[in-house]
Image (cartoon, rainbow, N blue to C red; front, side, top):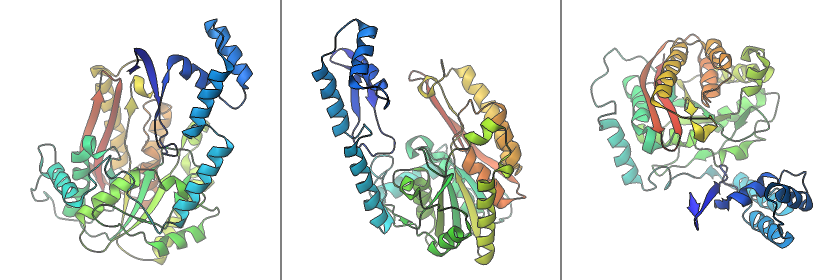
Length: 393
């Protein structure tokens, strides 16, 4: 974008720790790129001179630093206090607020119900036709976590499976964590608020699960505060299910270390311990479970770091690769799905494969079917995201 005739870069914090975006001119963006914790202000000033042959007044640089610090974009003593206050506040809250209501979806109950109903009944939705096969309980779902405006009908296809294949009243939800965590998983006992009412977290299950695990997986609980992946599933469940149900919300971090080391996830002690702990807890607490992967697929184009595109040809190839990946998923092949991502070094940036992997591992011996596949693309902006709905039995 342009500000006062100059190209500008928008700096935004995806975690929401810095509440407001900051717009930087090209020279300011260069200066910010040098603020890596190693360069002093004098170093930055010298680098700017070597780049532009212009002398940057120290007062101007200090002003930029002060503005960034004021808006919480610098790792400073002021930011540390700000962050600690946010963590303390979140831990004191009895439930997790619907953080994305009013931005990613409607924040008023009736309007939200109408909108979700449109996703079901619209031309791209699943409609109201009866199930084509005898009902058998859905053991698992693959659902998107893209915003409802772009992925609404695909959410409808995923959650229609709970109408056609009912039976569950406990939902273990694995959601992609889009920010860094200290550990691979993050637990919380907080209920998830939505405009349609709260989705209650099964606190007993979470506490029993935590007791079986070798590490403290509440350490990253704060990551739940801003993450949207599980929140969107809570909204859909609250819309669909009028009776009592409970959720077990689990954020899943990156598996890139497994891909880089070419290790099987079954060889990762942390992942295997988590799968075993879930199985043990479910055995202790018999019930009707469904495991949900809140998972988008590919992220391609200049916006995501590719040198060019996406183009129509790119999207056709992405669709081919997505379908091959989803075939492994519906066959219940957890390790095969992970090997598929590793074989291409995750160059399509499939952010949902860790939740999908965990879903398949926790279910074991599944078969399923793809219900819907979609691509959202803005060729001019250089961005495309793909996502799908699938049911697992």
